[in-house]
Length: 80
Image (cartoon, rainbow, N blue to C red; front, side, top):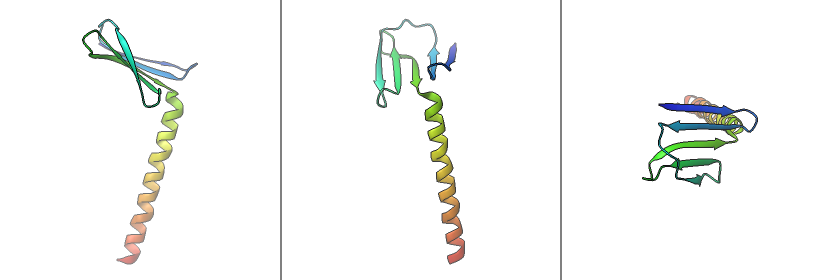
């Protein structure tokens, strides 16, 4: 069973896969994500820090990509 949780106070999104016992963690992406492992090194969950803030930044990047794509499309139409 997959469990998800979001802590609004600390802006942390977490996901846990099943009921395996925790053994150790590894920080990735400059410490913004922590991946949890069991004793056999299977991923059993992860936590994403500054989740809401990162989602907003991601959405801003996506919006810029679409805006740039539209501008490039208009330029191609004018040339053709």
